Length: 528
Image 1 (cartoon, rainbow, N blue to C red):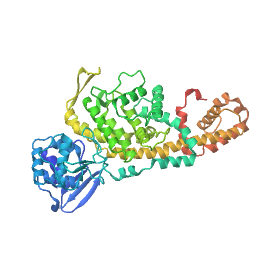
Image 2 (cartoon, rainbow, N blue to C red; image 1 turned 180 degrees about the vertical axis):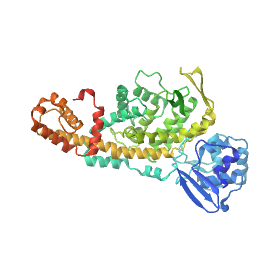
Image 3 (cartoon, rainbow, N blue to C red; image 1 turned 90 degrees about the vertical axis):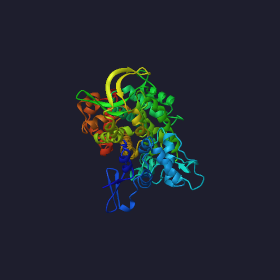
């Protein structure tokens, strides 16, 4: 079937964007719609067929297929397109789609078209707010277009308001926190915060495959606890450097924004495999400023959407010499705290949820691959490992990439729709499982303490040793525990009452799972 809209333009002008089109339109015998793997396939009858020229095909794309910034940026760079746009606008100086086309060309290129400007007519939106997440509008008088794009030329993510994104927009984090408080009390929820902060830090390092770095884990936990939501400009280079130093400590090789190439990869059969390439170091500050502008322009929109864009946008920019992943996950809680959604000292241990299971971890990798995989498929032949070069920041590298400029529109205008849906699911799991399990564990542990205190006097730290050992030993007094506390071995009736108190308190499997997590990560000197 003959393609129309963006696909016709892509074929006619020889453009292959990194980010796939969200809508594929074609001409067929009957009108139909089909959605597969997030891509909508639209079949239109002959009546809809646009003429085979830029103006008609772009009008169709704007009208029926939304906005694809990366494609428009690549289109605007081609010879002859500027003249074709000027001719179209001369024919239809007040046409809504011609005005949008002119506005986008100038917004994306920074160059003006030969056009005196629109003197009358209604303003039209750059983005349809029913279809996309938008920013606070600013009227562009020259084109009579309301610029509601949620970023700037250097970085402007696109988020389709899919059913999953709409669910994320309406997700009520405070309501779930209130439910936790109602079920367990504010004191218990706050008591769990200290543990959750350490758990989040440990899990964040697990994502980076550095879970054995106990001192770093404690440092990151302290940063999560004390730094979230307090910096006026969290994406400013000085702030990022300060956060990085607080997270990494004083023994890291590199600090600050990178001035050298960066890639994310792994080794397979002793060969280096590149999974993702970050943008050129000269682009990192402008792109961070664009991400900061996104946060500024979307202040009145969903905090969860903003947190997802801040986190994944930062990951794809990859601006730091080290610590990019940890800072990206810090930004989730930072945005939620800044937006008043997450009261201090609470944090959401999203990293703990990501690492909760092999499936969850694979899901995290899959959402990152939504961008990285098509990028690497497009540019797999453009990098090499060759001669070593010393960068201006002192880094010596042998990784060379020759398509920074060609890939720039993909880095600047990522489609982060699946990333928003992913974070919303992770936050829901965190609130309804991770945090609830922790509260259940603390509640059960306190009940077990109180039950044991009916028959035995001991400080809470000693009671916790007994509780943990009994649970790990299948509700019995182990020989090791009996040696440590001879009274338990000498008085079977006392031991039986203690076991009964513990088993009654931890009758819930969910609480047991949370307790097992505690047991695995308790300091060695607490072992019985």
